[in-house]
Length: 173
Image (cartoon, rainbow, N blue to C red; front, side, top):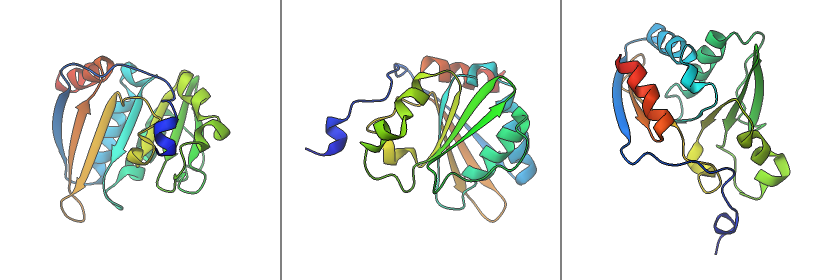
C-alpha cells in the first residue's frame, strides 16, 4: 500500500449526485480578467475549494492573479510553486493558493498544517490538484483550462458538489 492509501482526506464533503458542466471561451487575457471578476463576485465561492487543471502555461496562475486582484488583494501575488501554498487576505476573506506540482508525499499534509487550512473558512485554490487528490476533499468547482493558441483558451467548469453546482447556476443566470 502507498502512503496515500494510509493518509485520510483532509476534510470531507459530498460529491454532487449530478455534477454540472459549463464551457466558456476566453479570446484574450481581458476575458480571463472578466471571468475572474465574475468568480470574485460570487458569494458561493467564499468558502469553496476550487481546483485548476491544465498544462504548463495554460493560464492557471494568471487566472488566480486576476481573481485575487478582483477580491481586493494588494501587493505582490507570487506563484506558490516552491512554497506549495501562499496565503492571502482579501478584507475578511482568507484565501490560500496551493500549487501541488512539486508535492510528493501525502504525509507532508500533516506537517504543513494543511488539514487545519482546509477545515477553516476561506477560499482554497489549487493548481495541480491531482498530485494531492488522495488527501484533499472533492473540489466544489473544477476549472479546466486548455490553450487553443497563444491567446485563446477553452475553459470548462465542473460543479462537483451541491455548492459547486450553485456556482455554475449563477454563471448561467
